[in-house]
Image (cartoon, rainbow, N blue to C red):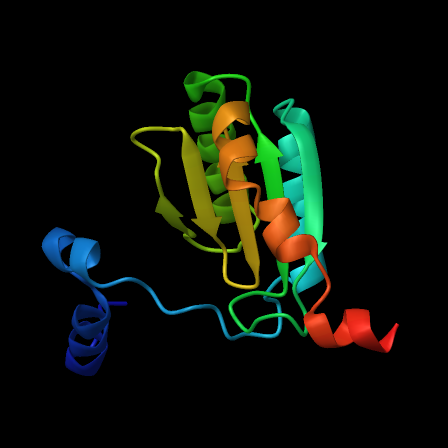
Length: 149
């Protein structure tokens, strides 16, 4: 059965040219089958363990900031290892249905930031991680929490 004129027109509206596909990012999934945030963290932590990431730390950001619910900080042994960890994590997130995460720092691979929405993943070389010391900055309690305790 050949498509009708309305079907042809509707399918043409949903197709993007290759140039448009590069410019226009797909919207986030809104269906009921979208993965849960807890699954996002477990997928990321599992991938980091598989890739032999070192000194992995998870920090709960709920109540500290609105940029994400959690942050994972980890290290790779070299620039090549950091890049490999980041590439594999991006592939895993996409394969598990979390879409395309935003990435910063991939060309240099000293510090790669992966923003997966509710989860931020920082992958460092050890020297760079020690210099920025994000665990101290984000892991500390808020001043009001320390006074109340």
